[in-house]
Image 1 (cartoon, rainbow, N blue to C red):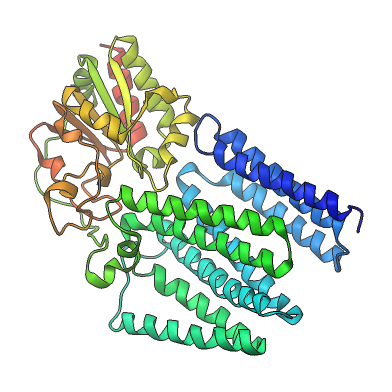
Image 2 (image 1 turned 90 degrees about the horizontal axis):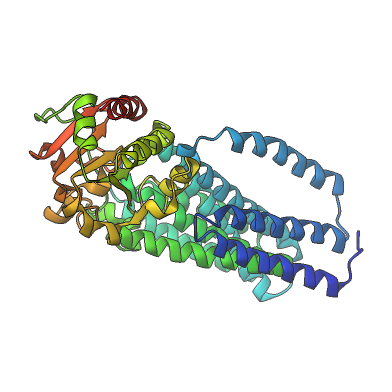
Amino acid sequence: MNVLSPTITALAYLVAAVLFILALKGLSSPKSARRGNLLGALGALIGVVTVFLSHELENIGWILGVIAVGAVLSVPASRMVQMTQMPQLVALFNGVGGGAAAVVALLELQHADTLGFLIAVAFTVFVGSVSFSGSVITFLKLQELMTTRPVTFPGQQFVMIALVAVVGVGSYFVIADASYTWAIALMALGLLGGVLVVLPVGGADVPIVISLLNALTGLAVAASGLVLGNTLLLVGGTLVGASGTILTREMAQAMGRSVSNTIFGAFKGGSTAGSTEASDRPVRSSSAEDIAILLGYANRVIIVPGYGLAVAQAQHTISELQQALEAKGIDVVYAMHPVAGRMPGHMNVLLAEASVPYELLVEMDQVNPQFKNADVALVVGANDVVNPAAKTTPGSPIYGMPILDVGEAQQVVFLKRSMRPGFAGIENELLFEQNTTLLFGDAKDSLTKVLGAVKSL
């Protein structure tokens, strides 16, 4: 349906691109994130409608049918996903984007007529395939359908080197001869490459890999924009690729490691390989009533939210506890680690869901000096981001990672299900310190009991 003129089409693409940029800006703050998300969706809608109205599309029935099937499946699936499963959802969406770009580029090979076109096809097929299979493996790790620990095997480095060499040969034949056979082989090599890249990554490094794969998907989509001659795909993919690259670098820095160490650390024994065994060393535990007394008679309390809080869906209960403490004149803030949970901003969104004022969320650099003046640090479901091994134990898998200095508070209260290590699989020495008290149990149940006891003081 060729309704729109080239000028109107270009203007529509420009509007959509501006909306994408405004969406990225909106997503930079919890206050404007919802608006940013809606602006991005509006930009995508304008892009899709513009394509329908500016091109003579073949197989329109099939296209509309596939869109309908995708909408029917994705809308209810997204609504059913728990907040704790958002990283898995992001991984799957990311993989689908990369896989779609690879398939489209493969099909467009029949229209190849220039060197630049063929280079774009080879790049999109390989990188999109890497992103697809890598994202599937990250989903399986995050969902704990496979081990979260690094998976390595003898000679893995040589297999990777051989893979790179074969990819080079395959790319040459795709570019030189527009060979379908080699294009399909390139796709298969990309799928294998994605698996081999993600398998050695373990523990707390997995969220960084999600961001890296997101950046690769953006680059693949940008290249597919060259293949299809679509300006909006080129702009949108470039924005995703650039923002994903920056986010990957920021996350790696927050973990105190480089991106290359994240990906190849297991080959050198430097990745977050840890144990899943629960410790049997003695610790000091207490009751909810005793914890309530500690909190109720404090002047300043710093709450450290972690993934366990999200798993227990205890964000509303922790918000009620914060309000109950404030009603008693106690100063309460939340300490936010850059990679708390399993994605940047994961905890911010979770607490916003419980209407926790954004002003109470204090970033790591600002809150760390405040711990020494805190009467109680209440750690709910966090482990790796408060583990002093990151500062005191050279050789530890997380050594060098910036942490929250909760150990400097006068009293530290840990709410944990068990003594099992956190996602990185590393025992936390802070649990055995004299100023640390543990309250075992589901975070929501424990917080509910503590809240009731605080109100009765």
